[in-house]
Image (cartoon, rainbow, N blue to C red; front, top):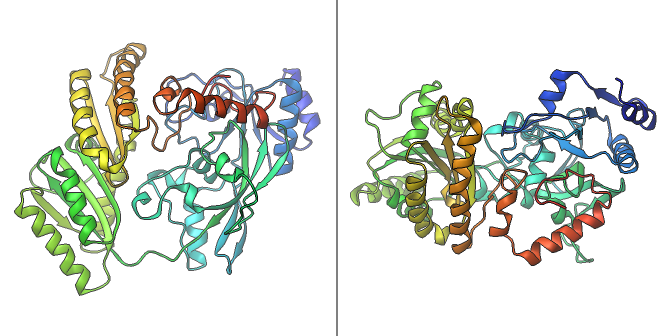
Length: 462
């Protein structure tokens, strides 16, 4: 350790665990985007919130930028440290701090994984309903920083809906106790919601009080094969009107192809262009009759070509694996990702326009679509052909993304539905937010981070 700044950091924060080995710098300096070469100054792994405050104060005095780090499962470059920043990892701050049976809340450190939260809630006969495929590695702090959504948004909403309170170490080093678990609190601005979705640019979430709910009712999982893109919203409307939907997810034949190539079992004898996996409450004969009626209605009108109803938990997990395994199966192709959203009512018009745009813009690429149709969120993955130079691939993709951003703007949509802006989508923020809104955000950031040290370069430039 030859950098004198690190010696002074250890003096300022006694007992701090600090990593400088090259393997650690590479591991902690990147997220799932893999587009930037990690080059952090060092990795700080504080043991508690007091050490986090001391690190932030030291960074402010010494002008060292900080990149907060959770599970680094992000897909927008929000946790990338490529310019000598200090990575502040919350990996050691991963404990459950308390459970309140009356308020039905669970208080946790921000480094705890989503899976561990699910398990802790289940120990008390309750559930934390936010869920997605990266549950075993993503952290609650990262979920809060991006207001993560996932596969249960249709029924339960985004992370924002389930945060009763949080503690934020601002860029000044001050600790702010936001929300405090109150159901009603009309005493001024709700700064808790300001911190949610801020991508580490206002401070570092060190603790969160999570709302819990009753475990979901018994559910049934069904996989449907669709003959065309146009009938997606018809099927969704029909199922939503007849069933108590928990989730409604769609993916294409190309998505299924890659999941099966990665290890999986084909659900049908024939290949179909589009698929939907849906989960809904199943508590008796009435629900079963409604399910069968909905399926028959869709097949009679030609909206559904085939279907599979899970026979037990094992098959239900297999059907969900066809959807949840997509991101993992595509990772080796270093895909260029778009994560967009529009109002559900605007989805048909946007889908038609976006599909035509991508067909024109990416005729030579393998494009994989999937998403949360029930909440207006689409994920578009463009796979890099073998042998193509990274810079050329990204350059071609970004040309289309600029046009896609303009299309979203016309439809009142967002260039980032649930992955954040980070580095990847920063050039397109203006398609989602007005110049006046962005200037207000800059002002808020200057107040909470006057030294400009909190995840600089992410979301927008100073």
